[in-house]
Image 1: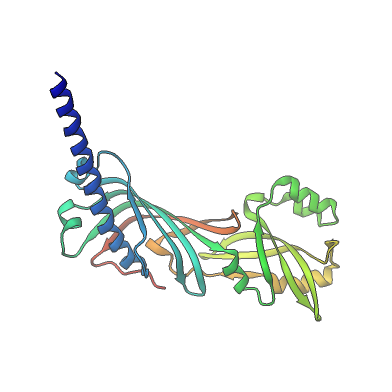
Image 2: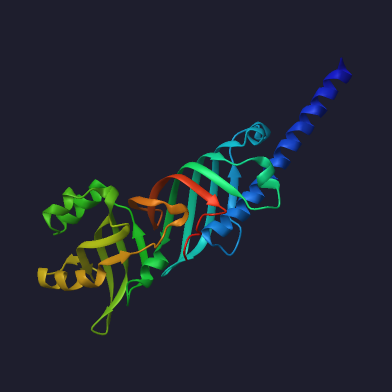
Length: 262
């Protein structure tokens, strides 16, 4: 009985090793395909979810595949991070592991592009040390209590952020803090200032000065053609970045599909 148990354990171990080894080979092949599809300099990180892998491989149907890539150049943006989850992916194992062209058919894809504060700063001439902070209802009410327009308390904190840094005005270096609305318009991310404050006391500026500076701090970020043909549906601030998220359906990745433009 002991020999049988040991034999079964060895067999299970071998099967698990084969399963993980096969998954690693497939992930490497998908990674190379995604590098070409997104137009990357390096292979992205790919994880095929679900265990065992071999049952998915035999059927050629994968429940979900995670793809992560960092420091992507896309148009005027230079430090994008991209993460995506591909769902219900059709790809025969013989094709994935073979040497010929590869085509992945994806039922659904959800993706997020993260725009760093450094990239946003490049779009704001004269601004240094830019930080992006999330807001909550209490923070917006505090801005109103400190002299801001009463309408600021009605903003949705999920679609607003505080941008802080330093700027030079009339030869004088000043701290600057901007409460801005985040919105998507025609696939582009827009930062629209609603409250701008300068100096250490961070008191509200007169309306005339507010209007002048609002033009300087109004920013439109064009992420170009997002990887995997994803259509932007959400824009928010998170962990010091701007996140543009969206989804796509019925994708064909690989032979016969156009790579993302960079």
